[in-house]
Image (cartoon, chains in turn purple, red):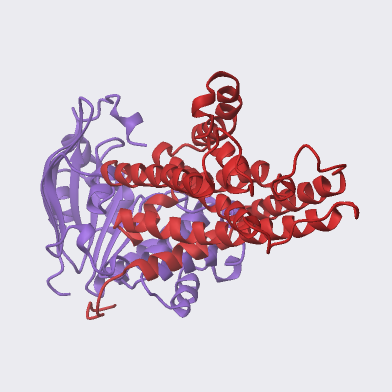
Length: 247
Length: 255
């Protein structure tokens, strides 16, 4: 567990003629929240989908503790992921949604109720998830990620749709989880939030690695993290048409 | 935190457990199956009650099972939605993160859905037969399950739900969009049947809905139709090809 690490090496993914991720290499280590920062369409979601084995890279590799995602023996016990807020069937009750996912990895029902409690959805667990607000949907997604008590958490834009209390809640939750020795890898396009949440940053733009360093180190050369970010990403934020193909 | 000392690995049993919970937890599943059942039994009873004479159409078993073919459409549609709803909702990515072995996921889904469709199909077919034979006017002697071919016809009529349902599931995996997949199912199973019936008699025997009506649920084989077992084989082949192609594409495509 102490040696848990995510390794990304030379990762490349094209959609037609557009390069979404371009020879990306970095490591993610446990113990601190690592932010994955980049403008919209910079390749963050694509990278995370490849890490989860959902998309196949054109070149390079993504390894979690030395394994491809598809090789994990009990995936939910090893990696918890939040990819999009509403990755559930709207007609299914929140608790049943989690019970189904739990069954796939032999996770007991009591853990389902535990995570519902943790994310503050215990009171609405019997409601159909289709009626959830974006904030509640995010919480349900986080509950799903926590089901297997995994040592690795991959969260794509988890603060989207959360109110200020929700944002603070998830910030504290993720810091606590990281302090327990987990890998916590969180993507966002919100610089200010990353400045508060993360200790380490992987910054990408146009699918390429722009920085891989501590927040302190990145902000040190500029007046603020925001300025440092704009300096780094200038020239990478033109919007090619691959956005539409990223679903 | 779980330290990974847990023995073995996730497999068919766990993934099938997930798929069973997914299937049974949607109201639409039970509503659709109830309608399927009602169609088979209702039409069976109505056909029985309205039977006037037996001189020119002696296969009463086939007549009272006449509600199977229209009800099949619902089971087929349920099969389609069972797969495409994963894509429309984004659930597919949660499912694949939980169980990244894609052929295993599809196999588990097909096994659970197939088992439910088969169970409901057999219950519907038997109930339709009982309802239809009981509503026959008293002067007509009703077929019984002990007569040659009758039990076979009723059993195969029930199995048709499972096979058309799995064909729908396979089409859903191939096409991934609900509307398009439903269109292909309805077009392939029903509309094509009408078209082929008037244009190409030699392939008529291979049209899914006509296999169900003319081969599986009959006791007396008509000219130009497949035998019951050949019909069952062809229908299984359709479902198998759709599922196989769906599984192959599921592995190849980005989720």
